[in-house]
Image (cartoon, rainbow, N blue to C red):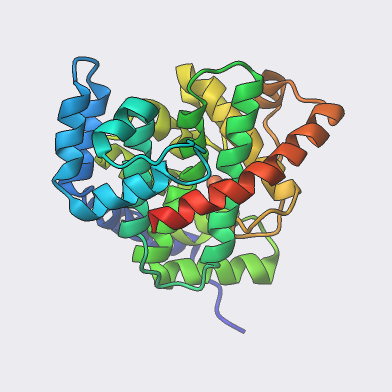
Amino acid sequence: MLPKKDPLMVQIDLRTKLTKLGENIRDLPTLPVVANNIIQITQNPKSSALEVGKAISQDQALTSKVLRMANSAYYGFPQKITTINHAIVILGFASIRNLVLAVSVFDMFSKRSGNFDRGGFWKHSLACGVTAKLIAKRLGINNFEEIFISGLIHDLGKLVLDAYFGEEFTRVIDLVKVKGIPIREAEQELLGLDHAAVGGILANKWNLPPQLLKVIRFHHNPPQAGESMRVVAIVHVADVLCRAAGIGNGGDCKVPCVNEQSWKLVSLNKRLLVKLFSEVEIELAVACELLTSAK
Ligand SMILES: [Fe+2]
Ligand SMILES: [Fe+2]
């Protein structure tokens, strides 16, 4: 039997680990210059489509990926979009920025070092994006494409942990399996902070739009999101619903409790849920194609 550790030593140990992890996350790569430029340009209401087009065109690989995504069945345009400027006019600034962001996230986190089920993870993320978008549409929210990307990258912190802290994250996943606890609990126990906090640090470093940052940081506790609570609540509910429906893999088999205030905000009932999930099934298939085009 292992000797019991002094609780004070455990505390100090955890604090050191936490400081080190926090420092290492802050050292993570910045967004590629082109992607960063595009995010900043598209957040400025005075920017023109020409400026955005010029910025994207500086990166050939990015240009062709964005065009492939714009032409995927997800958007379903009857005519082929052949130039970035055309894509910007048709899809708008926000959608283009989201595509650029999605491509960058895939590129930056393509390497994996842990034992995390990436296939299952992307399916969970995609389903969450689609479900959040459909809930937003039903509630009459205009920028539902924005909500799709929020759902798609809400668990950014898990990608960070898997790609850059593989050893630690492998232990987290092992602990989830051995103890049968939720992944957030295992992260807290072993790392002293959870994936939402990790993702929040990176989103902040990347200067992501505030609403997106809030989703990444507070998707497990929407009331903390302040004025962005509505959107964060939609992603939170979508996350819980996709876990309950068993679509993909969020890292554990536990269905988290839904936040009561958030549930009231999305006002769903049994009949609407059945309808919603039949739509999710259809939309998920086309969204899969969008994801493949980004890789
Ligand atoms: Fe999460
Ligand atoms: Fe999730």
